[in-house]
Amino acid sequence: MRVCTLGTFDMFHRGHVNLLARCRTLAGDGEVVVGLNLDEFVEAYKGRRPVIDYSDRAAVLRSCRYVDVVVPNVGKNDCKPILMAIRPDLLVVGSDWRDRDYHAQIDASPAWLEQRGIRLVFLPYTADISTTLIRERM
Image (cartoon, rainbow, N blue to C red; front, side):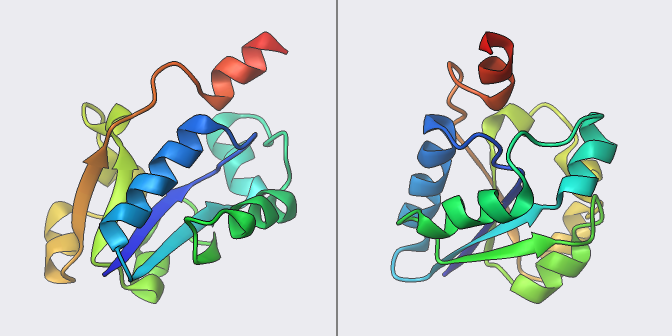
């Protein structure tokens, strides 16, 4: 089973670890692939660059025991190219996206995912920690 999650993973914290550990559980003996957002995309989307640059965020993710592969998300908010390259069985996102339009966020409709055999899975969000909360504390 190949499990993919997409994100920025800035200021790596316990919430990121929880998500990736759950991805590993779902993948079993398969692969966990992280599609990592480029700095330029993060700046355009969030209005600010990540605190940690892409190469350092990628290095941290590669060192995480739950992650097998890190690939750059060069498609920006059109995630179809990266999903076609990774070809995951599961696309995993935190449950904080359950009430938002994640399909619009990644520019991939439920039908597009289904045609490619990709199932979208929402995993429990760790509510008491986030990069935003860490930024506010700084």
